[in-house]
Length: 126
Image 1 (cartoon, one colour):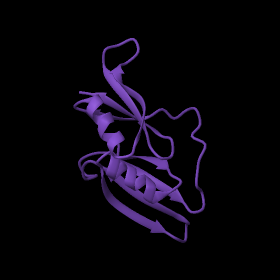
Image 2 (cartoon, one colour):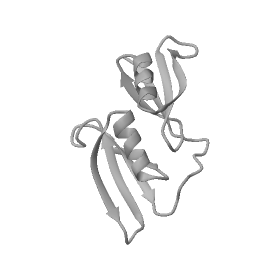
Image 3 (tube, helix red, strand yellow):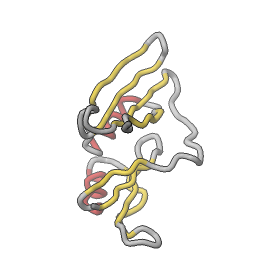
Image 4 (spheres, one colour):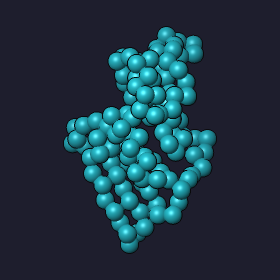
């Protein structure tokens, strides 16, 4: 078994694709419109789905926002340099919500950014 993808519901498909590809540097792997079901799916990731997990973005027609709830945590991405990754996100118009630095009660350097729908993405420095 392996993890194939994680699904996130988004309020604006193009805005989300622009964030994950333009700000985080992922590729749009595939996109499918289902007009009869009134939804669109887009898969983004760093590698082909045959090699690595992806993120499935789901847009339900007419729904512009969701209550994220208190159970969702974050998606974690490994980065070479968390400070440089935060700077790159800011330069591309993204939002850093926790600057790079050691995690509380530890030494691992982490940072957090937020996607346009409010989902948190953690950068963990290699």
